[in-house]
Image (tube, rainbow, N blue to C red; front, side, top):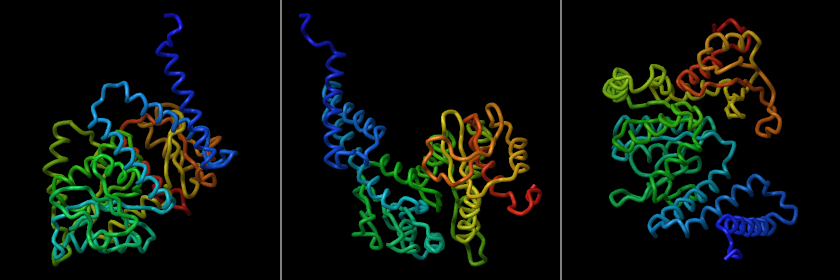
Length: 366
């Protein structure tokens, strides 16, 4: 009996065999130097493989295992596609599949997509009809991604994106929404039904809880003959958001996570303004690092420390260079501070403040 392997010994043996397989596969794929697969990437692949093998002893039924299998396949296929377009800004366009082509919202979505394409952005939509089709017509097929969902009562893809290599078909809503959120530098939402509400609240929740980087969320709609917005989003805010605020279910800073646009051109301006000086952000240990397109003055940094003291856990905001070992955008200046990881609406206001500073006169925007 003493010669029988223990559970921990079995686990170690499994891990060693998986590591050997991953190393061998890496060499076949990237050559003997294994230069194309860093140790960190390889370690995560090993963990993924070990987890897959452990499913055999977890008592899962076939349906549960199949869901995991197909989800990983969907995500792998989507990541492979999107990774070919790294470095190109992308905007997700949400809205109803039922919007008629004669509706002002349809015209607005088409114009918005066209204007964003003129700024060298690509559009991601759901690939169906209505707002999704309009979101493809504006930027055209070349600058569009289509993320379709398999439903029994809707067409798989509109005629603009059908057959394009940038059209992806998803079985699961959660993998599809992950791709929308993880690859979007901005989100434009046009009026819609339950699906549109699901998408906007998904994005708002992920940003509100810090699970997704802050991006501009712009609420857009068509206008009447006088150029006045039709009023969908104001009614939405009154019926939904103000109700949540009055009950205390969201914080007073949370409505700052989205903004209204008076026209497609205004929506484009708001997105451009968000990236006027702000570039991107990431966490390094307990600190938030904000990458900037252009450095701030010492006076600008002092203003930020005074105005946003409430979201600084400890210390102050400092302007720095890249963190040791940081390889992305090493030429960009950074702001670094110990973020309290709460009130992300206030963090959005801080980004707006950063973008408001004048390049010429540090006092001009104060």
